[in-house]
Amino acid sequence: MREAEDFQPRSVAHDNMPDSSTDTGVLLREVDGLLRVQLVATPFGMPRRWRRPPAVRLAHGEWLRWQINYRFPGSSGGEWTYRLDTLNIVHGPARPDLFLGTPTRYVNELASLR
Image (cartoon, rainbow, N blue to C red; front, side, top):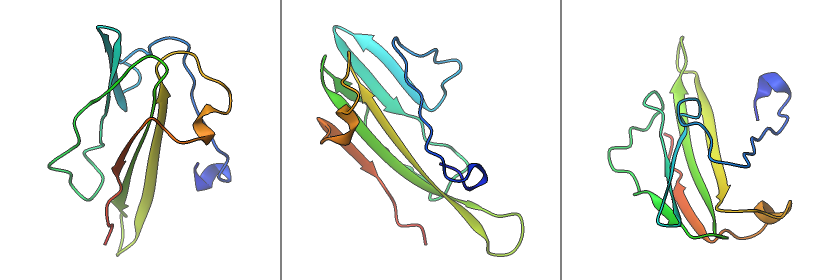
């Protein structure tokens, strides 16, 4: 959600694997029936993340919630912008209300943003 868009929720759903050349926020690869998921952190946000969690492998029917937050310095003074990214991804077909429940796997990269 963005303030400039009156905080309207937005999401993207793919029936197949997204094209990694256009979806640079997540790397997906299917190997031996498992979906390998790796969230790509932006290099411009703070704090710097020198150590990141490893990729997650999902079996068919499992789903993942991966959360990461950032602060971005403003162009003047001490102002900064906050961003929270939440990736919900399932390997295989999903019910419409699936992401309202408890994920099979959860990765928490929420950091203290001093």
